[in-house]
Length: 340
Image: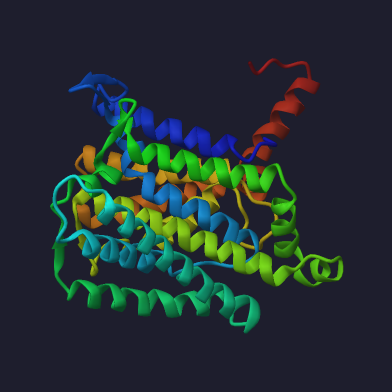
């Protein structure tokens, strides 16, 4: 199959159909209290933070880099947002916009930090972002004093728990970020620059592309996506947990990007593939919990499914597994034997 999206879509459909076997109402979407509800809506809503982080991670990986600090940025963003509105009450929106502004500022700063280390100082991406992964989690714990900070401010909880046009508001945030990323990378030369830097940064520089600024930009965008994801997570649970918020999100985001068909060697990237990859991971998590698989083997099940997706995407694997069957079928047809 030529399309990179074929096998991820097949796996996503299989996971959804497995849910239908255990819950006949899995695909049912109904209106309750004026909002659309159902398992599919829940998957989109709960997967919103992972979708955002994965979109940002896609552009970083397209430059042959990686951002291991996104989980810590989520924790910091949630902590800063919750702390800003912790004493707020009433309907005033000033604390809300202050929190959003601070979260965006912190997120951009973390992206600049990673981008400068990678593009200007030459630190390897995995090392540079590992520093933020460790330090950021500590900063989040310092902000929250190691405790879970609770929010009692309705405008803040609307970001992750509110609804617009009968759908969760977080879905619109993801759609807006995805639209902006798609427009910038597919309707302008930016996508070509990113792929060029990921394929051969030296050749890109010689051809007139400022590869350092491209690298800086993708890390800033990744940090911004992680910050917005942290805002949604913190808002959705009306609290901030510096110890556990965003834990392992960096690994799930990398898996989503890989499942979506973007190579870790840099170069061409597939935003829609990443979206499907993130939906696979979120659907799998929902399936594991809904059918009652023991929590101790959750990660094992997830790893097996991801391995299957990656193997199916490998041309060499498909050639070895399905090549023999295709050859036998061709041989029988040449002998005039029908195998249908």
